[in-house]
Length: 394
Length: 89
Image (cartoon, rainbow over all chains, first blue to last red; front, side):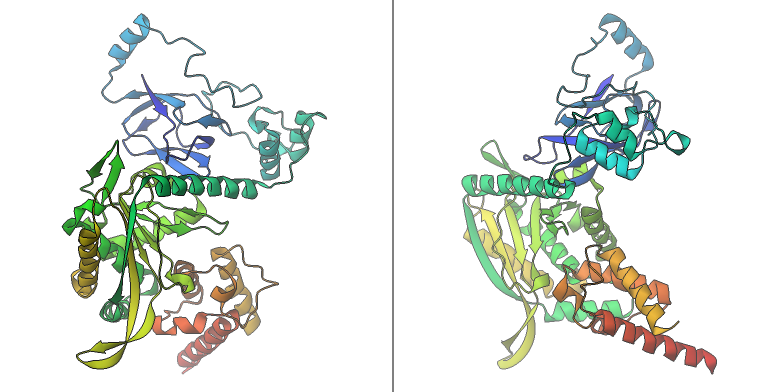
């Protein structure tokens, strides 16, 4: 039997609250299947299982908050035969109340057996209030229609001694949790990583003209945004200057062959998340665009996948939307570099000896001096520039 | 569809994309992105929803006409009446 544990979705995450199970005991899962949704300071995240097999038992109930590393479920891996499993269990039956028991800081109420995780009908207001009061609504007797748990049931269960509703709302609490997470990651970056910064101006006129011509022939939902050209150019340039792509771990650089670009996405509630767009260098623009669209959507609405928050190998931040010309970014540890893009602006530039109005963008790089230096970083930005002058070959 | 009906549909689509927009506070003549966090991705969603609802393809060069609530309604009134006339002939 194997344990499916709550993964760490970044060095700054300590715990998460289980919000939904997508599997039940007996279900067969494939590697990469989404099995649960958890709520973290980065919002609701869908977490995947990294081995195929059969779910045997769910160990953590809905709305329980558990630390990173907690076993959430038991499953039989596809390579474990039932016979072997039986033999092993006979020899060494796991002790109850062992690591499989939900942690002590979790539910204050008793849970029903978790074999039947069917969610009880609970009104949204009741679930919200239950969360505030630290009560598991699924354990309550429901007096509403069809046995649904109502707001009154929740309040009654909490009793007169229950804490009165706090002054901060859930949204406030989650925004401040995210702010702390950002602060921790950025303080660590500034403390540990010797950054160097470079910046250059890239003429985007050709690329934007090409994009406009492409989009003129496409129906609205298939049109591309220029950010996708920037992402592809960064991914291709990495192939030439690989020391900006990867991680700095245990005192040394681990360069990555795949290019998973973390895309900084700001959230309506404040803060940001940096989910990764996978294998950007391997994919055509037409494939990348819907993936990018979907990624930004999910970053804002919830349901990013755990892997997307874990495996970015370089980050791109584009703050051009609100008119910022230049970004001086901070590396997202343990990555090696981050590329910033400002907004597209018109500038008069010499073209073939004559002044011309061109649309330009400022590209900046912050990179880790332990791994590369300004010369290589400069070549990296120059390569991004060169690639953007040939948009048709991106 | 009357201009008022168009306006209420546009507002509904806008709120679907950006639920933080307050329809009472929204200045209908001012570009939406100057009032709320409304980036190019939000705009794409908005334009796709509008295109689907009114069954028109909005060319990229017309994006500038969809910047405020009023200008979007004007654009749709003009385009849907143009289309009705064309069908009428």
